[in-house]
Image (cartoon, rainbow, N blue to C red; front, top):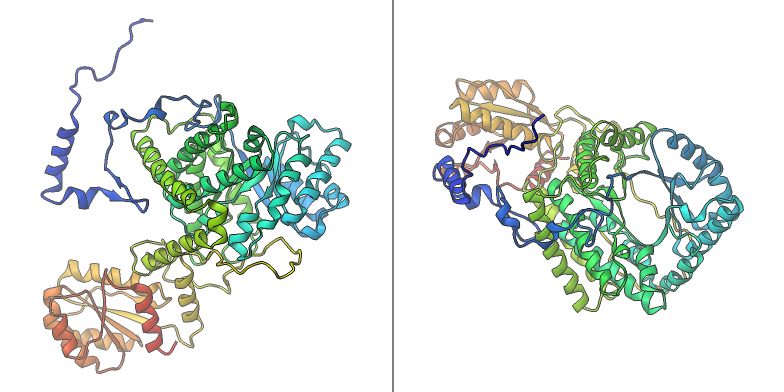
Length: 619
């Protein structure tokens, strides 16, 4: 075999960036490059349609290796193994133990137990963990904040009694009073006094994290990616300050902090978010003078609940699959896939099985666990990592200048900022500037709820308070699709399902396009939509609509032809059904003068329009 190394494509001249841009301009045929191809992110920066090696020349992080400071390329050097985690809400210790043992045989290697504070006891824990070997399984616990130290002491005693190798055990206790503060609207900062005793209680379990940053709560409340990143870093920095001021060694404090972060559907941006988070966290911790190895960020990623839907819920599988891929490619430590049916019920065994298998497929079929930092070197992802790191860092500095994360949380400023984003995103969904597949875009025309109702969230903490906590704003975790779902559920309760009939006439291409748009627009409210091939006259179309017992007649034609067809159709219908024009033609004022009130088009507020139609229909 020849030892000569040949470089492929050496006979071709590499095109310059300007040559690429010139070619793009030709293909755009005069269209504006900035408007058509440059994406303006919610994070405040532009993303170009392509990147080249030259775009990375000033990025220092691209020269680091996996497993090396600042860990932008991950904490691992040999592989990309992550824990497949499933959480269990524990109402009965024995039943939860049986479920845990069962799913451990089905691919799970990380368990999360949510335990009510009143149940924390030696006997309860012994029953819960019976037969589970913690040296082979990551164990994670969540309970009332004021019972975390007690739980830690019970776990240490239990592991010692069983003679388990304490140095090898991996897991966490989810202690995070600041998260409770934002979720429950109560100032629970008094519980922070338990942070140092909790670390001390776990001193014999060096592999256990206990101080948690639950920015997944911000993600589930609709926070933008840069907000979750910036606030998570400020959150973690707050805990580092509190712990070191309490006398905890900085390296020990850093080793005990764990980040539970959300991951949403913005595929490349989410990959960049986790890479940027590790980069920035390493820089923060390094300021305390600790060793590089203690500057690692440890992340459990949860697929988002915010974008999940009650209707067409199997689409949730598509969302969570790309989210899981983002987290895996970004080299997180563990992943929890939210079951597709969580928006409307306690997840079934089937839904939980699918959620597990979504991760197992990435490992066993796609081999995502075999390659270290597969995203490293991607010009686009490296650029996004740098850009989002800059925006996250700006937010971190703003929080620090305002007095720190705890102070801002106590004032309600963090919660208010995230809730404002949630409101903005709901407004964008209402006008279809943010698409929700299967809800405000391409809904399933024939689907019914079959009795499904939105599910609420329950807190595991049952400890009574003394009523002295100050009232604070709560994170609004109203899912993005919730208002459309409420609308559609109200339509289902009507005595008759409204029928929307497409009166298609005139220009073939335009009437078909308008009819397709209108069907998708109106089906989002649960209306029965009836498309048609076309009518020769408006009278023929109106007669067909009335024969179909239509409640809404939508005329679909070209803008120029509306001047000819719309008014005669409206007059012939004579109020026997609601009349709607699909589009915003130049003759709109003339149509309005003739009494036509209803128009739907790409600039319409879909949600408000459909609410108004329901009101007119008596729903």
